[in-house]
Image (tube, rainbow, N blue to C red; front, side):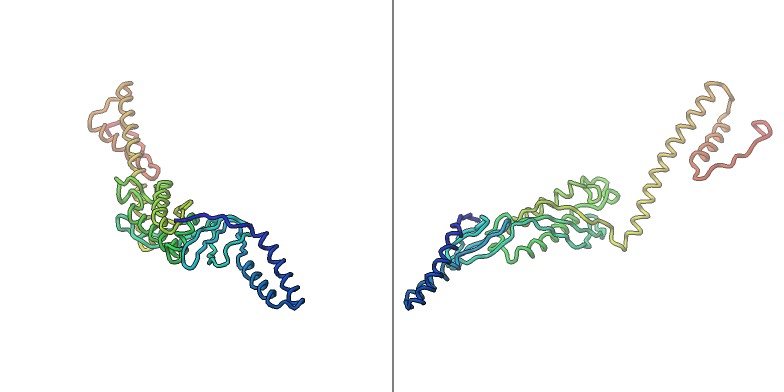
Length: 282
């Protein structure tokens, strides 16, 4: 588990380095060679412990293979010169995932990609729990996107009873992806700040057929509305003709009138009228 430590300020060590360097030079100049060697060794010892930690960076410290702690304090610092130090960035990173070709829940081949914003939250896990946390993030992110695609249908044309689809899920789909990524990357001390689907489409080999299917579905839905409206208009016309006693029609004439009105109202092109110059029954 991560352990935060607070090292000494490095400014005092920096001053001591300057003083020991000057003292060593004076000792050699005065002929005190033993004292000069000791001062040089002390200078190297102090200098090796000085380190600079930049903003949004950290150092993971070890002592002969044992984890000592992590330094997240910024500035000029001084640590035990015998400590090993591993530099790690705490800044947010963008992962623009590559477009993956995978089958959705219904078995249709689709193309999907995601953009992920992640950040190191536990330096101990990031350094010691996984081998190369950046590569770990990339591979696990790809696995999570693939799992999401196989868990949901592309749209409701394939599964009308689906609670969530990739196409219409919106924020729910993004939340599902973010939760799964956090669960997968927790072992590496990584926190996912945001995850969004950046590309979603049918694979090229079925894209044309699916487009035709969508167009057919839209046409059928539009025709259904047109027929529903046309039936209402015909019903209203017959009712008003009967109520106002404009003309009396037998059942055969009513059927002919209904047929003509439905053709006019439901036809794709404007109807061409035929004028009857005789009586109603000629």
